[in-house]
Image 1 (cartoon, rainbow, N blue to C red):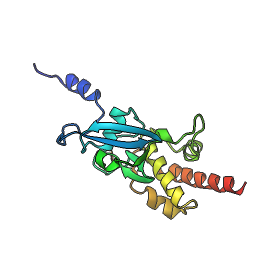
Image 2: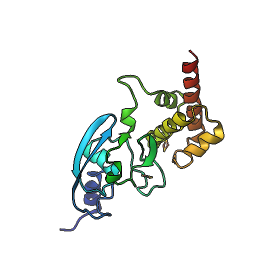
Image 3: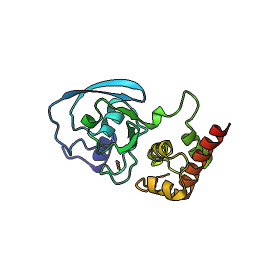
Image 4: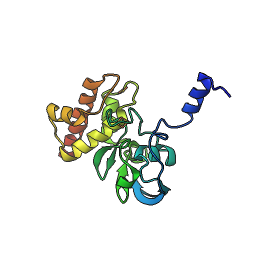
Length: 186
Ligand code: FES
Ligand code: FES
């Protein structure tokens, strides 16, 4: 049967744009790890990208696939509090560790202050880069609650925004840092 371009597109749309065919499936192994405070246990290929496990096995689709090559950081999650590119992180590297995704930030119906700051500053257009930006900002503010602009730019330097919303994003990080200072002062 000849496949038309439409057939190919509809097949492609049924899977997360991952790297299913670009790495070899090896022996399965069992891994336990935490995602957003919840323990997970999975039998899978040790080399599967964390991004694929999050999106396809755990349905945590807030973590985005951009380049798949470590170049855009749309797929950033926190691994034991440190930002990592989940497209390049094999699931074996997450064994026994705690992962935070964008879904894990809000407390019930209250947004995390960094999420709220991005909203208040209008720091999103299409929004595709925003989960990675927010998680990278969380890691920055944890280590440096009062970053100057140069430190903000250095921390977010690898996170690409195709909508070029960088001024608003930097304003959002400033706002999140200020709100932290205001809350501490009260
Ligand atoms: S999708 Fe992971 S760095 Fe681009
Ligand atoms: S808001 Fe569109 S990629 Fe950043």
